[in-house]
Image 1 (cartoon, rainbow, N blue to C red):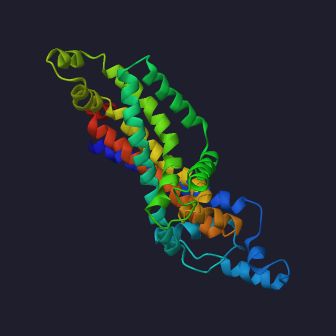
Image 2: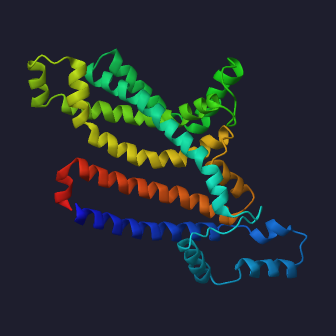
Image 3: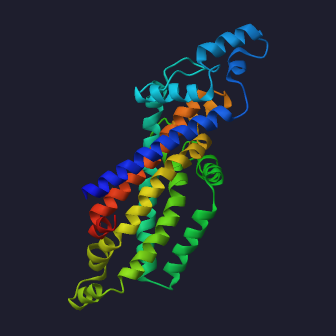
Length: 307
């Protein structure tokens, strides 16, 4: 296990360095001059050059990268070009809303997917199975930017049950969580069905039936436990995707999280804030995948011997 841990952490450091470099290059090579955005097109060339020197934008690209990387090692994400506020404070202010939405979406996905997947596997080739797979197809096919407005039209404007947008009360969380969790629920339901169908044909399941155990007891205590590894792997991979998908969902529902902050920073060409938001989402995705990999190896000892 120690060898696996060292191997995964080494890979994590390499990937993190690559992510930092890519985020830096992508932001610095996009069209647009942040100095002109800050000062306006009427600013004199002398004023623009003075601000460019203050921000370090006159330095060679590698020098800018090294400065950025050394500041990251010290926990310094810089300041917003627009509001002058420290970026780490802006992220800390928005992060709780994004985490709340992400885990609410994950809860919705599990609440929908696990029962549907179990029903589809137990009642294979029946109406339950076809209904669950139809839901999966719809969930994967419908994008967040279409699902969100559709739910708003139905539950907010037509029925008047839930708020349209914002983060004012618990009911404000329901529609964004449904939007974010539906796509994951569709994928997770298919994975649950597929893994359960494999497990239900094993000898120990037939032995449990021969002992007189009820079907729910067999599914919960035997089948789901042994089918959990692929499901956990998928959850770990998709949790990072939920954070990325929250950018669209937060924009649709005016949810004050990291996603909305990213869109606002892009519109204002606030490059340091965009860098920090993209970097946070990317590193979260990488760390979650590494933790999932380690959890998989801990749950299944066979994985450790293939390192």
